[in-house]
Image (cartoon, rainbow, N blue to C red):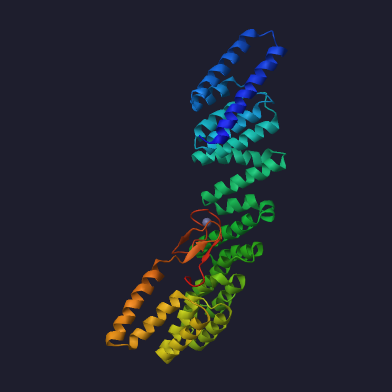
Length: 393
Ligand SMILES: [Zn+2]
């Protein structure tokens, strides 16, 4: 049991003791009720001393009268149950509170907010959504409305209700929180992908333009806009859009290389590709860019041009992937014993290179092969990026 919970139990016990003492002094006209409360209090204390905290909590909760002075203790106990994974008990406590007619409207709203958190924890999304929608609509408390909106947005996002999530977050949450702003641009990208799937490029473009209005750094929106141009064979326009991505975030240079090379190939413009790769390399000498550039040169001018480029880049900066590629180039011309030595070396560089993750979340560190727009571990949007540097892309 967490120390915080034990401490709260003790506080609850003390609070009840104090409350009983006050009642004894104030209302001597109902000795029966006082005796019952006193008995519950001592039974609870006994459970606590015998290390039966669960029974102790149940008894204290039953004994603790709900009024303006004890409501905080009830809410806190419910929340503690939820945080230690017993949300069903939290629901009971919070529902018990809500049933009390003495609750003021602001108190009732606070309890409803906690109850919706309990429902979310239990996966009862419909019930949580109903409570939260009601709070967002009816409350006059800005803090409650903001918290309810945040929970509602989180819920709708889990359900893939991108438009509904956007409608709740827009405009206040998006303006106030960077994380929500970044997420909102991705919800619009989700909608754009759906519209692209429905063969509605016009609607998809509308969502993507809005995404970029909200978050000018949204790399995904530009990639999707480029994809829409590709769908209709506008490869020059596709290239123009892809070229914006490194301006938004240089870490994503590796992500554009495949569609970029493909677009130039479809235009039958190898010179254009080489010029483009050259300009990218001056800005971001990333491994996958070096390899694509070298491979394009190798096919056009032969292995020595590729070897010269990679050697030059390795002189400036170490790169495991480029080293592996260079060993492969040397192997192609080697025979006999040198060939075997190079094969041994490359076996190790390949093992190292393929064992490394390609993308990492900058927020929680989750790393993996694929680019996830929403991190599968911490669920934040747009924080997973290609890994760059010696061992990276
Ligand atoms: Zn993460």
